[in-house]
Length: 353
Image (tube, rainbow, N blue to C red; front, side, top):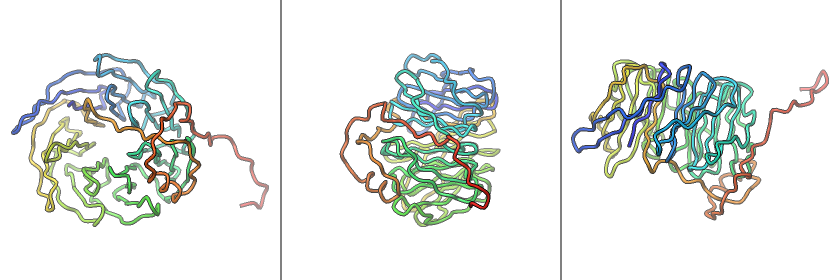
């Protein structure tokens, strides 16, 4: 596996990890200095590492050939979020309010839509690959049906959320607003609980379907149970604030990876048992840079895209029904077409609400 981290210094770092029972060592593998501004987002698939930046570009790095693979130029503003689904598509979101769907075959933009009236701050693809969630500075949570590529429904959330994440099983999702984690149930699309962190939250990561790692504007990582809404344990991960957290499962334990402004990437061993104990440090590496984002790359990383005929689900209930289906048929690239909501709407006359 490799650790991929972006920095304020415009550089993306790649470290290959040698795993040992007692200690893991990270060795510098590549540095990718393709951006002209700080790196704001990173994502990995089986073959590619993609990074987004304040320079408005998405840079590609081919992990198979170990070479730069070019840049994607479509957004007008900072790239705020990147996520692969399967190995065939990439989603990108930016401060221009656009959500773009890219084919990784020819790296062409299949469609871009005005997803939010303000910035797109975060997005998350459902484990099935059938739908995605996005949040933005227009105080909305939007659900996108990736099968027919249409906006499924919009939920007003009264505040600007900056993180949204599906759980691994896809039966719930979390929306982060400042220091609060709101847990939503897929069946009802309503909040089932709220967990409050001590500081504004910078990153969250599901370790399993109920345990969420939460990093905030301090040096501590806290683990909570999103089902019972309890804090389980916490540990000091760095000397300064933790900017990003990722994880991967080994045979009988979880590895939590953290990155911080202090320049360190650290790997922690955590046993996911009934009573959680603070993790032990497996290994660390000092990048000597101010880190902004993090991803763990594995040759087999990237979820499989679900394959299903186009549907017209427009409510949360219909989407739940769609997600419960087990049929799988191939998705053609041309089916991933997103509806453009950016066309101006006719204004009502004075007196209209």
